[in-house]
Length: 220
Image 1 (tube, rainbow, N blue to C red):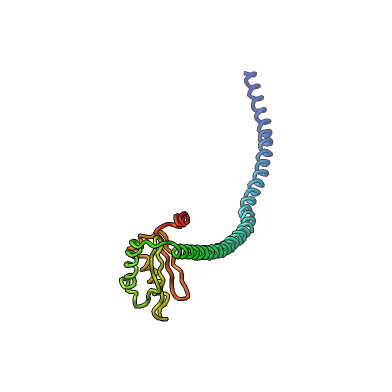
Image 2: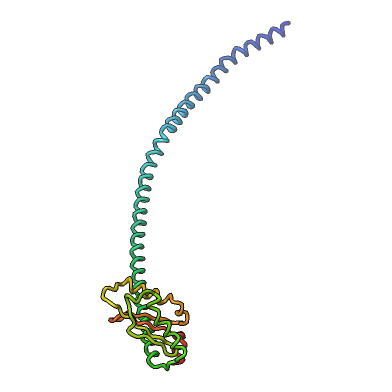
């Protein structure tokens, strides 16, 4: 019984000594955690609250600069497009002028060549008579005899030559165009492979050939 009482006394004494130690050890740790946790939380809030403002203040100048650069690039593109259009128009105009000049020169050369052949070749009476009958009726069948007349017309072996003159000074460009269209849409025009029309001081001269220029060059 004495031993049991001594054990109980020692246990109570140990508990009394341990309680203050436990309280002393726990209190600084809790305070320390509180002391360091609160500043961290406050700092995080400060950083979080200031972060959008910082990003916004950095993004705004970049966005404005990008917009300015994009606007400048658009203006440069528009300027280059305008310059390209001007260059293209100039090239097209020069090309068209060159083409027209070449066509006129080519038509004049063919007309002179056919005129030379017409002067020198012999006449085929059978073929020439048949074509000359159709040529003679052309102005009447086309309702153009009021505006135009033949200065001369005739065929030989491969080439026919027609010379038209206006009946008055009132004949305008529209009537000349009508003559040209009617002539080259006539049924008998299919007999010919080469045709050439040239305006003259008196009117218009037309040459028609049943052979190509290459064939004529071989034969004449």
